[in-house]
Length: 125
Image 1: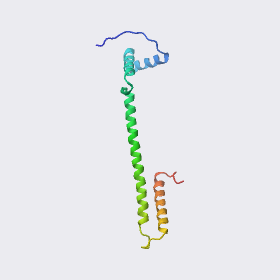
Image 2 (image 1 turned 90 degrees about the vertical axis):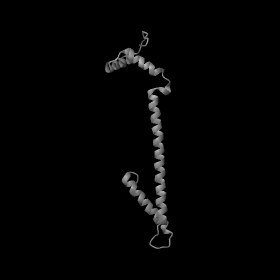
Image 3 (image 1 turned 30 degrees about the vertical axis):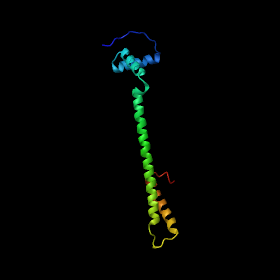
Image 4 (image 1 turned 45 degrees about the vertical axis):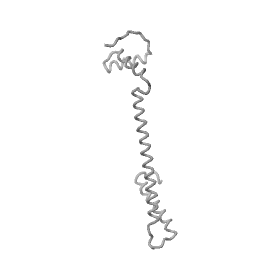
């Protein structure tokens, strides 16, 4: 059994009410709650439970950012691929006319509009 020292401290009414509520909810003594709070307070900041959660959240945010960047890159790559494919696709005549590029751009814009309309009707308002 650990040595215990009895001490008397003054705390604010607000914290005393919080302490009384925790004691009642958890069915433990006031000394046990205060001792645990002091143990957490004296831990180095990096070892505190909330710091560990913050580290996990930061790692998750970094991974989500990488996923978002990867998805944006893939979407841009797909659009570029579709545009190049539309430019190379032969028109009604085997000889390419200057209007083919305009047609490819119009088809790509129509394609992007259809996709955007399905995903978010407010983009092309």
